[in-house]
Length: 149
Image 1: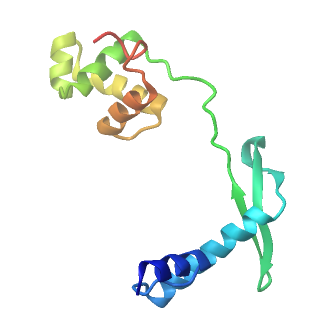
Image 2: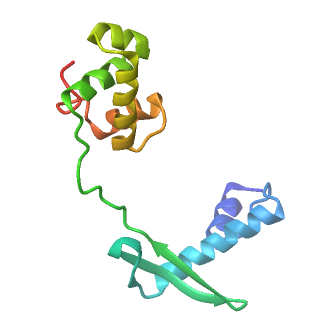
């Protein structure tokens, strides 16, 4: 098959020769949805959290109402603020120190380190040390609020 016929088939929404029937059907359906969504009018509905979600497609298929919505990202209203001790512990965790080492360096018990870790996890809504460090790096808390390096 030539390049021109492949491009024509792709533009027309037909299946590609290497696709199985299910994949080809899904691709054709997705193309039709996009075409329908871009040609139809759009409206807004109130979603969870009282935010406006954009209705891209609203249709009924075999007695089932199908809504395709473009949800707007929810903004976190309050930035996470760690205490100076939590910043210090988070920085040491990011360097790879285990709790016992952190406790020895800071001259506190390992139980106290665990308590600080639980509070940091709760504030950041994470469940592991790796997730905690990733979240802090993602939020840019390593600059300023995360503490000096």
